[in-house]
Image 1 (cartoon, rainbow, N blue to C red):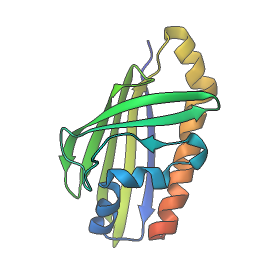
Image 2: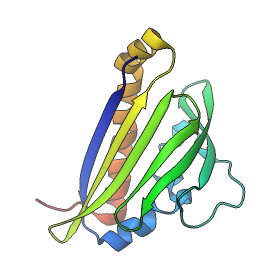
Image 3: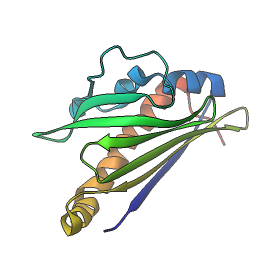
Image 4: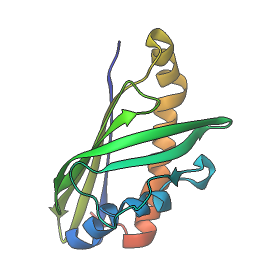
Length: 156
């Protein structure tokens, strides 16, 4: 079945160290996720900073009335540059999310590249067209605004 990619970038008026410090703390994911999604980290003894091999479990409600358990593994970490999280258990057949930071004109260019495959074959293709793609846009629009509130937007 089809595999999709979702890409977003944004320029922030902050140092790489400031942005990395925020995004490498697993607890901060809740701060940049819309509250209506009911995002709750269920991992016990959550460390302050992520590390390669770390497993994070959480519950999230991407659609009203649908609560999903997710387990992701942090599979790659290069501090100050990037990390990758991959779903080990959850609603997708494949979920691979690269988070990258690059210096950009006295600020930071932050990029997200998600490679994913919905479940349910042809039904997943339909769900991607009418729900998933739009939901990702909505979540990342919210995230963009929260990060601008925290760090400011880097002018062109």
